[in-house]
Image 1: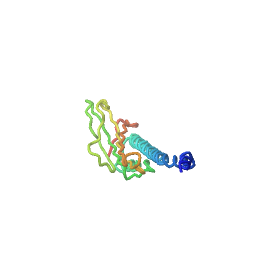
Image 2: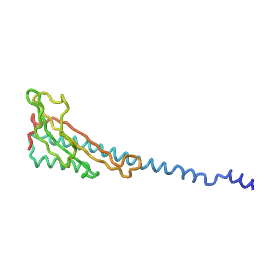
Image 3: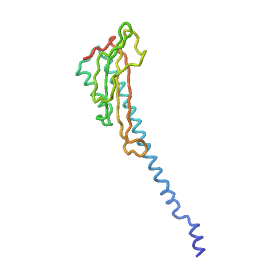
Image 4: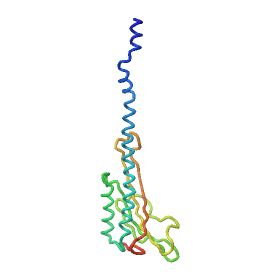
Length: 172
C-alpha cells in the first residue's frame, strides 16, 4: 500500500492538464480585459476625433444656418461608428470678445446634450476682438463584458478652433 502511494506521488501524468486548469481562467480574464481596454481606448480616440472634426467643420464657414449646424451635429453620430451613436452627446458653440475683452456666447446648438452647465472658454483664451468655435463631446462607453473594467465609462472632450475665413462664424 505504501509503495502504491509513493508511486502515485511520483506520477506526473496529468500535471500539465492540472496546471492548465489552474492558469486558464487567469489567461481568459487577461484576454477579455485586454479586449475591453482596447475597445475603451478606441472609443476615447473616436470621441477626440469627433470633437476636433465638429469644431473644424464649423470653423470653415463664415456663417452657418440652423440646418447646417444640425447636419454637422449629425455627422458626429456617423464618426463615432462602430460604437452606438445613441450614447453620443454633442454641442457646438461660438464665443467672441468685444474690444474690451469681455467674452460672450454668440450661439450654441446641441444634440442629445444632457450635461449640466453652459459651454465656456478657458479664462484668458481669447484676446480682445477674437472669437472661437467650441465643440463639446460626451460619450458613455459600455464595456463588452464588464470583467476587467467598469461596465460604463464616461468620456468627454472639448475642441477649440478659431474661424478660418472670417473673424467670427455667424450662427443661427
